[in-house]
Length: 282
Image (cartoon, rainbow, N blue to C red; front, side, top):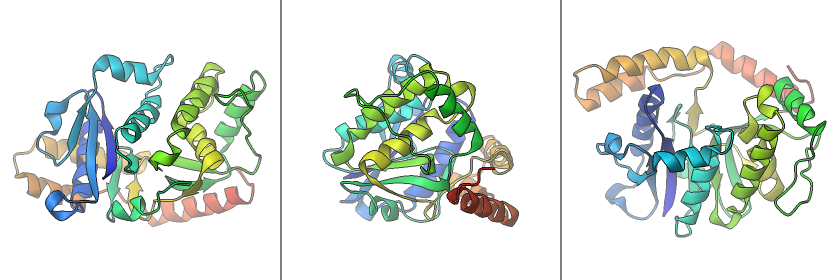
């Protein structure tokens, strides 16, 4: 059995986002609950998810804080949750997804891209952006990041930057996770976070490339992190939360209001990725 993995710790607008993402995924669940994939929710508030078709994995607040590590870096927890999900999967593949997402196709299409030596992230963004380059330069002037076995990490000049809103791994490659955690901790310890918020994203990009061939998933899942998409949808989520309509009516209204990139955004993002792939950083 494969697992689509979500995280929700604490309260806030992310809860509404995760709920909508789960609902868009649940429309594609295999009928009858047979072989295929299931949705897992790793949370410190299990009661908040009882109305959705998810397998709840309760996480204590102390465990959540421990997973965030010495720097209390919230995205470090997703590395640890993915590692724990793989360990408990019974051989199934695990596909972690950020909450600010919605599914345009069945997650099965993405699971099919995962296997031994084959992983998934959201999208390849091309050459690393300037803040990430500056942050890594800052670290490398002070410290040589090391693998767990003590050998140096390699950061090729022609490496790609990947969006980490989606991470898919086969249990055969679960050893990537502790390596990514270790690299993330080293980056944070040496001040990477002072220049860029993408510590775990860089660690996943180089970690997965080190052990696997990485594929995109953006044709199946929309990750709407840009503020011009996320903020208006946040207002729609809040309005529906406080409404009195039936669940299906609320869902349909949210589906119609789901965040989609404008034509201008698509053109700009495509041009930016193409420029980065040939070494131009903007």
